[in-house]
Length: 463
Image (cartoon, rainbow, N blue to C red; front, side):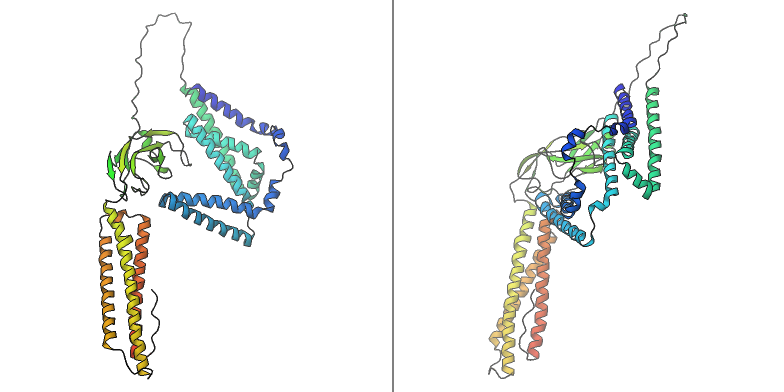
């Protein structure tokens, strides 16, 4: 280890030992004097419901966007995230209003979370400086221990009263961290090497030249995009498979990566990965990748401890250029047309056929009821029955057309590449088709019963 590392560790160790005395010096008194009379706690107690609602909104919006933007993309994902965030915020606001719960009730837990976050930040900082997990952990913990004994002394007293076992574990961890830090410092001095000479010896010696040690060359970190191929063309709606192979020591352990398009990235950084990768998010030409010529590449980042990684780039892949057509022409295009045009039109036609069939059948039932009850001298004529049969045949033909379209959709080669939006449209149309067919069967049974019992016609079931 170099001198900067030793000096840095000694300086930080000195800060740990002196932090309590430094805290006693009120160096911010002049800066914070204008806010001396401001009681933030009292303000919170007065407006706690409003302040908590803002905090809930920020929290739930952030979490919902993290989830739904990944799943559905920026436009649709943001709308869903806003709706979910607002719903959860209102739910928590109502819960607080009815139960009297406030975020301030989490005071000890909140302080512990704050200390833990500061510890993670310090650990990542030291790990980036020293590249030594043990020393970084020990230094970060000892600094946070110093803060707990001074700035957060109330929290430690609370732990001693309410969780004595946890307070004891903190003390044990402090002792272990101190020992680890001493061992690391001793190891630095031992590793620095020894040079000794004997000035009293006059016996001539022969000088031997030791050949320099040769170090084994380290394999460089490398990312190679294997899919898509360079200059590959895509039509709007095509699925774009993004995959890459890696080599090198840093890529054989956990790292983060982003796939970038023209210096932008598709979604959030992908964590906790090692080795070769396939981009896990659905990527479509014409949506996530707009029409035109684009540069596609991957970037790997150093993985941090516990937290979501760092911004230190390990390496970058080769750049692949792809071209996306302005739309149509691809196999998924006719599949989308089957769903949004052919199927939707056929189901609408089936519903119209059902309404016409019910109108004719209802007229026949009414004429028969009037004839039996003596209100009319004539029953339904063969003309009305012929019209009913024609309407029923037309309805059956439309139902067969729908079955043919559904078979074509499910057997289509591009079915697996459908977007969530088109799958949702397909599911909605299938539900419409099922509801209309169920209504047709129910009405036929109902109309025949009314005719046979000479009853007045009942309204047909609504799909």
